Image 1 (cartoon, one colour):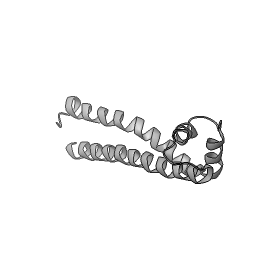
Image 2 (cartoon, rainbow, N blue to C red; image 1 turned 180 degrees about the vertical axis):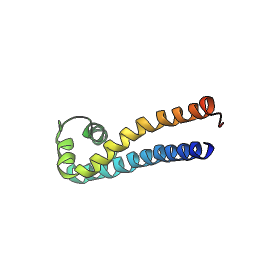
Image 3 (cartoon, rainbow, N blue to C red; image 1 turned 60 degrees about the horizontal axis):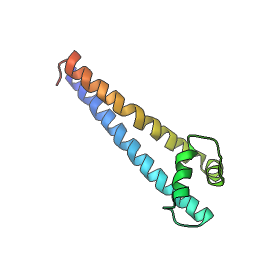
Image 4 (cartoon, rainbow, N blue to C red; image 1 turned 45 degrees about the vertical axis):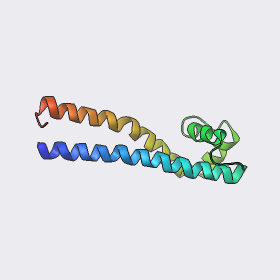
Length: 106
């Protein structure tokens, strides 16, 4: 049981870190693509807002429309990374609590 516990903890910790890395890198790449297409710097607030809105809502602005038309796969990866970033820490906490109180591993 101890081995399974530590494998689950390591796997979930890796998932959290990988999701954070994916979100950061995809955000940078997509913001640079927007800056290349529409001009300006990749640090502009409208590009950050477009990345924020891209996977959550329909294409409301010109930037989000461009992203969903030109980069559907990276947006799908970004959506997956957002879901994992929300679910994996909760699962990690559940595994740690179960290991502590139910199985006595820690």
